[in-house]
Length: 428
Image (cartoon, rainbow, N blue to C red; front, side, top):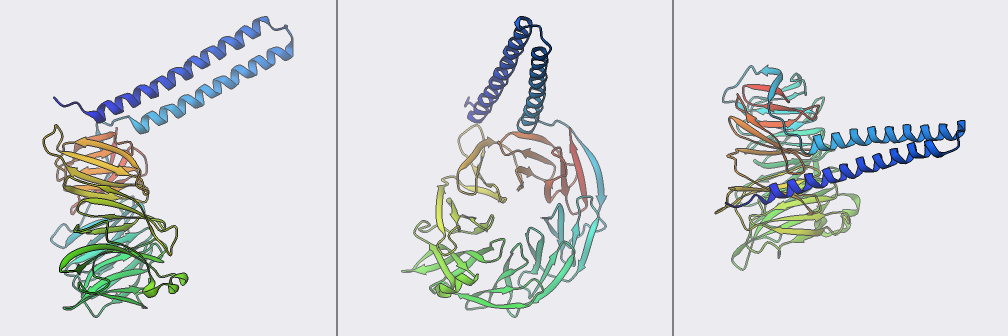
């Protein structure tokens, strides 16, 4: 039988942690012996004895602080929960065909449906409700701002934590949207001959910025776009035709004042690294780092030089990519494995492309999410929770259909939301 290399690695890591703890205890014991020995042989004066007692007290305090810190470290890294209880539950009024999905919004959720959206707090209560009518709603969230658009329709609702700020109206059908942490929205629109990227302020008014792209043109056809949190940079994945062959590129545009110095605000493009691979998703993680997910690779970029974004690292992926997930601190991919003991592998990286961990597993999940440093895998009736070390923190059943999971207010809590209910789940 094939050995679990990840399990051996985690076991070795635990042994190293215990070895460090043993050295700490041994050092404390030697220090105690030294102080008590000095206490017995030093001159019997008040000053010397006070100094010795102060030293003992200091060492005791250091042991307590070190022990507490070590306990917290061990708890966060290794402790695995075995049971769950429900802290609170909200049964939703409607669980019909109008439901579409959830996004994390603040400490709670943005719930969006065909007939409206709502901002639901971490206590399960509505903060605001916005009514509308859409045939196929899509949503994008960035920090405290959210946008809900009617895909193939013509309206975009732009909101913050307090409610709807404005409504953008388009002439052409909407394909995709992205939003910055300042409330600026970029939308891919299309007609029968070309695609366009338009920009809107948070009050819904159109900005005097737009880009046109066609497959046979210099730019190409946009598959996906993402705005940086400050709204000044945009990265996009494009398909274009070259010598009769369909190719892909990732491009960067600068819409700040300094970006006016670049032709069409274009400041960087990468196409040779993709050859014939399609890049279906791009994402700005923060104002510096961005990532592009191709069919066979993950590319990590830096916009530290806003006029010349750079490729930091490209990780080749030879297996079939099943899922991708990301936060501002981590990027993850789950691939299918064949012929081994485990059917899947989860690889997690830092924004600069450095590897964090690689964990093999077998689990029939439907959704893969990350919230901060906590990774959630779940399906219709069960879930798994991993930490940033790749350790399994919890595995257990779910008694209702779940569409989104996020962290709760405490390390042993998470929130689970579905069409019929939202629950706070406590692990123990």
